[in-house]
Image 1: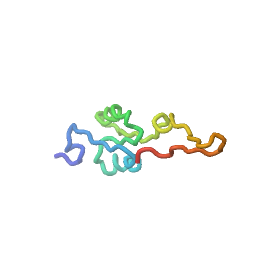
Image 2 (image 1 turned 180 degrees about the horizontal axis):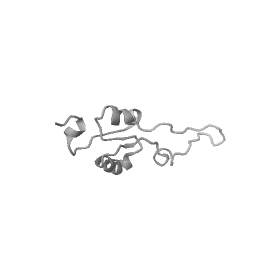
Image 3 (image 1 turned 60 degrees about the vertical axis):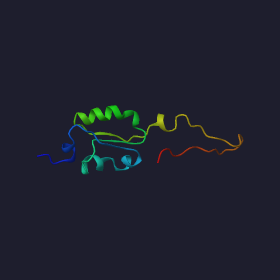
Length: 94
């Protein structure tokens, strides 16, 4: 008899992505046992490897913030070139 939600799904993989996944990371994978992988907002490029880990029965989680995805191209916007202050984007996504 199959007891866990993962066993009932068979080969179907369920993942949670985004800022809430980042916040609830371990709870989603271990405590609730409802999902196969967890990916934070910057981990979308890592989905193939997360799925491969989940397929092999390993913990599949990437909630690390990525410097390349987050602010690599963002430069401060100065309204006045002589001013010591500038506007910088501080949030993405949620």
